[in-house]
Structures are given as C-alpha cells and as structure tokens.
Image 1 (cartoon, rainbow, N blue to C red):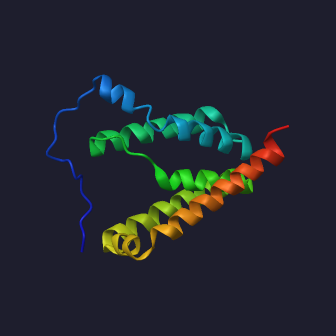
Image 2: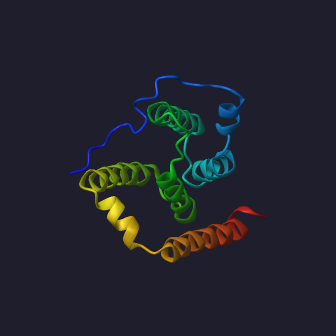
Image 3: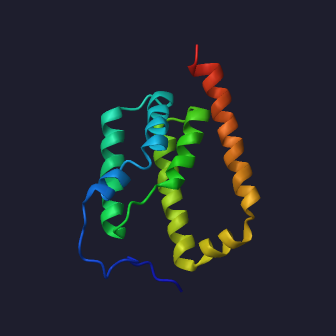
Length: 143
C-alpha cells in the first residue's frame, strides 16, 4: 500500500526570491479567467472564492515546497461555467473529487489508471471542454 507523504520533507528552507515571485503568477492566465467565469456562472461571492482559493494554493505550495497547480479544480471550473452548476453541487463535487483522489492515491490505483488511459483520450476531453467553453462564451457572454 502506498503511503501519502510530503515528497520534499527533507527541504527545510523556504526561498522567496524573484524566481519564486514570478512563478507565483504562472497559473494566473488560466486561474483568473476560470475563477471569474465560475463566479459569474454560478453567481457566487467573489471574496470568499478568491480567499479560499488563495489560502489553499499557498498551503499546498508550503507543504510540497513547490508551486502546486490545482488541475482537478480547473476541470471542474470548466464544467461549472459550461453547465451553470450551483453552489451546493460545486461543494459536493469538490468533496467527492477529494475523496476519490485520496482513495485512488492511497491504493495506488491513480498511477495505474494514468498508465492505462491513453494521452489521446485526455486530450480529447480537454478539446471537448475547450470547444464547449468557446461556444458558450460566443453565445452567452459575448454580445
């Protein structure tokens, strides 16, 4: 059985230099539009969403000692924007994703699934969501 642990536990120094500062904004090009889209599509309170997102991003960065993108949440954000999902569904989906990923990681199944799924399937899902978001933007959000 795999054990979940901090892969960089031996690192004790937190460096914050110009490279780290620049890297902190590496995902802003995707995060900000997705967060804005989720806030608008689901009619959520921006201050709470942005505060929680920022705190969790900082905590994962401190734990792993590297900037850690939150990819499953980006996929969920795309679905929220495309489908107009409400707050209760978003919260439930977030908890469900966390539980599923935790179980798959502990059992080692996550790595096996990643090895079984061809990259073309992953890219196809990404393209499909991208097209759906593009069509939605053109029909609903761009006058």
